[in-house]
Length: 314
Image (cartoon, rainbow, N blue to C red; front, side, top):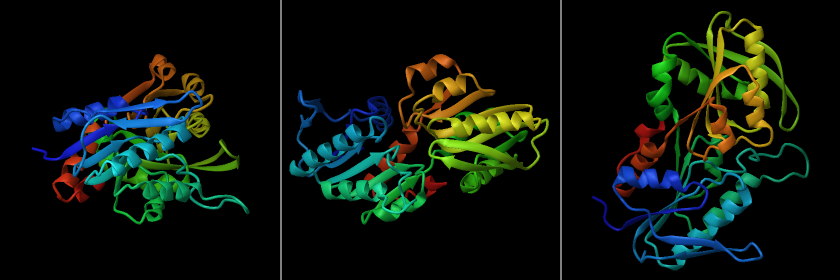
């Protein structure tokens, strides 16, 4: 089916790359990434890519700086090996929260990373559930922004949360996303009003909507330290919710996140495999992982065949 196409895996999520290749009936491109004793990253391609349309699957998750550099170095190796085209498939875009100046004399690191990726030689970007959609504008190359909604709905949410659920946005910025899920699940919508006093800390202030006696599903794009999520779950239970679950695309789970979720009122947390789930998170028994491999595989298939992928955006 495919002529002159190769899919390479960065070190951040090789299992996802393998699943994408399985869906496309391809083998993972042969490459080797290693590090010198001083920590420098080195990459060698072990197959010919001259004139080949290449795809590098690499979420820039923790350790973020190592994975960003690995992506850049792999792209440079492909460019110098005369690859026909280079598409970076970035299921999770690190530094996405630094998309604007939040105080005087601060950087916009999301734009800096975009410039580095383009300078390395990437011709196209495929990303999944960006923290801020305007990051697309930081790139002067084609950018396909996909959403995990179809995978989450089809593989888990429709079966377990249809009709009798209240979809909860943990902040005002996520209302549009929560409304879209509520519409497709035929459920109600609620919003949590919060105020953040300092980075990675939040305080729930008020709940807008009726949650008493209802099953609640908190919806977000990522779970980082889980402070917002746990506080929201606690507030919903105090407001009379029957049960509280959560759904997010990216399980960043930094710092005390896993322990907080383990000790919280959350019945389950549904996430995707855009980032590999940590072992301690798996051990809690609260996490349900949904695969986005087929979604990304279909995007790659359509890009390679020059077909429209607009139907994958919803």
